[in-house]
Length: 117
Image 1 (tube, rainbow, N blue to C red):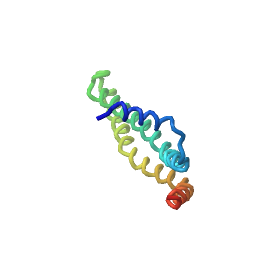
Image 2 (image 1 turned 90 degrees about the horizontal axis):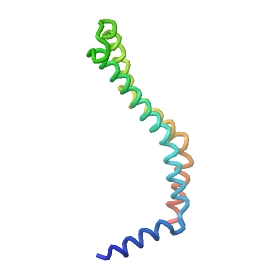
Image 3 (image 1 turned 90 degrees about the vertical axis):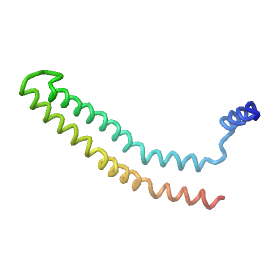
Image 4 (image 1 turned 120 degrees about the horizontal axis):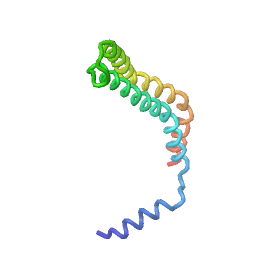
């Protein structure tokens, strides 16, 4: 194997001008449709997990050791786990909305690309 040749070809592909800008535009539109739902889902999931963790710490008396804090921890934990549970349905709805928003442009661009080849 000539690894130098393979490496040189991969570097050349990186710097070569891209002749198919429609494919790049299609990828950007696809990412634009999916990105907001992904950002929200990760952010909401992380925050929900932290809330659930705080609730578990309070309910297991790792933080605080009194009965009112334990009860508060149970309530906070239930809220955190509920938010974790509804995260995926919210993601699906947001993704569906994003796909609907850009569907016409994506389908039109995909048809143009498929007709060229």
